[in-house]
Image 1 (cartoon, rainbow, N blue to C red):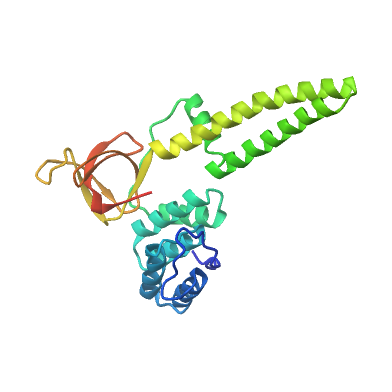
Image 2: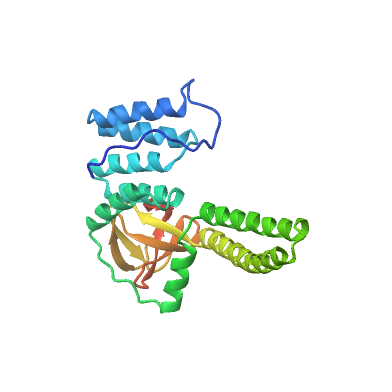
Length: 252
């Protein structure tokens, strides 16, 4: 957790700066609080940047580090997870998330999945939506190149090579497009959450008066399956299901 905080490289989602400050200025101020050991001020400053509509892997990394230092494990894990959703291959985020997860009080064994399911999930999550989009564009450009060679070059041998290469690229392009939409579908259909409360008694139904199903602690990750009013239905990796109040969790 002693890695240096990342520079202020923000993905601009709103073009209105706060009180004339640029996103980099706001980030530098927050970083200064962090480096000076004023962790609560750093948390407030990073959260203010998010409230202005800016986000980046670096911002979530620094905010996660600040929450970790302040002892709020659930919030730290939540922000690392948010950062990895933007930058899934970021080694710093993955490393700090691993350390934070090791501090979690809940050690839950995941229900084993069929090999084919694990293989498929690993394949479509190998790249982010952006990554799959880039791959699709590359294959599309290569296909256009083969088509151009076939139409413009008069040598029959090169035309045959271009035709065969184009056929293979077309099949691969269709496959890559399918993988892209599978990745998009996975992100849009599966909602994950992180428990933020230090300890929480999960209910068997969306009612404070209902019986407790089980107890979970801050930092645990789960799938959000449904919503009823101010309640969310969650499923743990071991298959346990219950209801928690929405304000007790952070949705990724």
